[in-house]
Image (cartoon, rainbow, N blue to C red):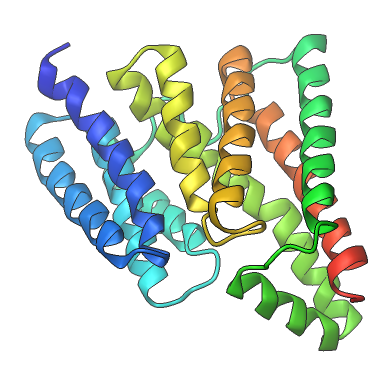
Length: 254
């Protein structure tokens, strides 16, 4: 593999990691967007489609984020998926949702991951944390919303968000990282990008990035072990269900 073919996917992952940080440091987001645009142009010319996919996803994420859309990754993945129907090069080589296989070990790791994530978040919530602005808004809305609206939102958060994030990071981002780096490095790179995505999430700030990085690292290991997304998506769904339960029982009644 030529040096440009290795470098472009890694530059695309760098841009993807920088773009969400623009929510707290705008100049960093601008640098990420500029780098992503350069990678798209260079990647198309060099035929480095894994890099083009990640950089395009990052640009879309940044554009939708500028408009203040919640869950900006959703429309970003949607646009990329629709575009791939006309331009097959934008489709991940392994497909959008490769199934993979499973084993007792991977299911055990999945259960341990869900329990560990729930325990870490519970400890954080009970430590009287400073919530991010988006979380405060959602909690305030939940306190005055009808039960049916809350149930619908929770269902979408639990079922849709995990699928979108896994397609984006353990799918598109991991595949691009593998195009330019060994397996272990690729797992770390996608976890870094996944961590920065949650800089304004729950929890927010450095704690949120750190916990999300650790979570993404484990999910990346499961992705490698299973060769697909089935187990990681189900793990993520279970984790989001635990997060929703914690928010509804700890934050909303407060």
